[in-house]
Image (cartoon, rainbow, N blue to C red; front, side, top):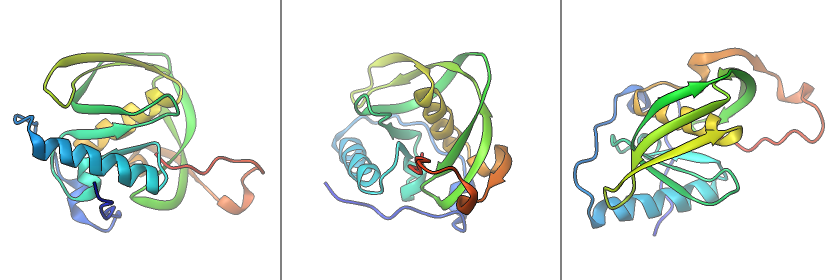
Length: 162
């Protein structure tokens, strides 16, 4: 496993559409392992392959409940709406309020190509939406209702980025 460089918003690759994964092989497994190590080292809640320069529909997420590997993920159901604070490993030290669904259902494949579904609520719903947006070249800053000044944030604000 290796820690990979995280691309930042100046890198035009972040605006490109990622390709569907069709080969579930050792190279994909290595990418997933490296992405998890990179996300934990950053530290972050999620990381999409495009953020490490790979245009594949692959993401890793850990909302504190354990690692989830999402390949070819697609939101198939949403409910509710919530505005919360987001950040991104590709846009360091920038935070904003973003409106996202309260709950989502995502169909995806695991590292072996098996079809799966996950229901996310709270932070997991935010992270799923945030990472799947990366698949289509969308950054949280595109959806931010307002940006926040870190100096005026409340004490105890968790600045972990998605």
